[in-house]
Length: 204
Image (cartoon, rainbow, N blue to C red):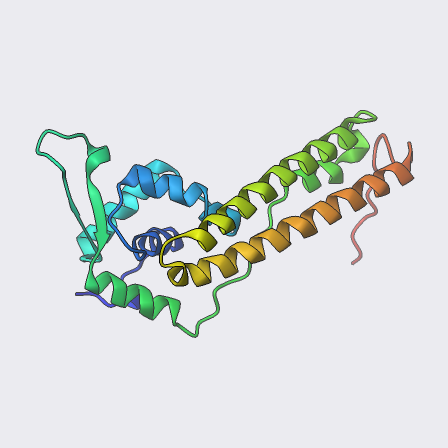
């Protein structure tokens, strides 16, 4: 059986295996729903097609196993569980001393603001206000998820997910603060900088 560091799993594979590491078997659909209410707050939520692709990979490596509830049932009723080999591989990966990597920042709103010299007056302010409302909604979802983790049976098993959700809550609070400051910055600009933006030539 391949070791965890030799399995060649992409980060999404480790994330799906991580979802399986908690108690109970789950269908691909259930894993997707859980990823949408947990992983996406601090990493990202894979598409359902990616989840099934990773589940097939995990099964081929012996890291997961599955069973159907009946021979004629559709794929959605196949339940997946982690194997001992999968748990050992995941533990080796989670406990590894290697650099997890640099966070990748892709902020579509800031990209639009960067091109604000080409935007109509008021457009950017509207976009930022919408982003603030969306962020407030995300914050409420995170708080709901953390509350469910706190009230779950065997709450001690959810201690580390609660830490991740607490980080996610603080991040969204910081995002709100940054967006509100951006509104003030935009208001301070007025009509300055609109139109064609002359970029100075690069220094030799």
